Image (cartoon, rainbow, N blue to C red; front, top):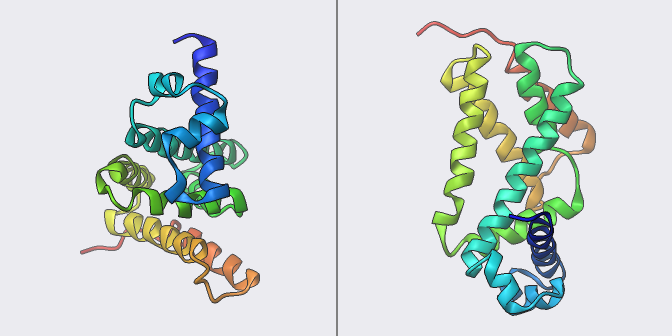
Length: 185
């Protein structure tokens, strides 16, 4: 794929995100995205043959950007097993209004087709596996992932009843779970 073609693909995903943010998920149509991206519908179809492919592209970008954020945070931390978990927790729980609004809208857009979430489910399994590689047992690793995701979803849907200070304490508690040793069974 040429460099220009890659830029067109990113432009289309940018436009799709803007359509969702400005008009809502129900207005995410190929025509609306082509118009917003200022590309022909044929040009859009070259990169994304249908709406599901476009949604996959949007979700893939979210996963890629989360991983980039995770790696940036990891690079700033001391090199130890706990750093992987800290970087994940902090990158996922970053407060970014645009990203949060987009996440809620994408959830609404993919609700009709759970298959679109399979790559995201695989990403969550990968996170648990990475946590296990730090020496945590599966249960502890999964609990951390679920706690982070639960906090994130509560925030996304404006259901979190805690102050900013309490939120920070919760995040530190979640990170603290990474310090506890495996328990015998």
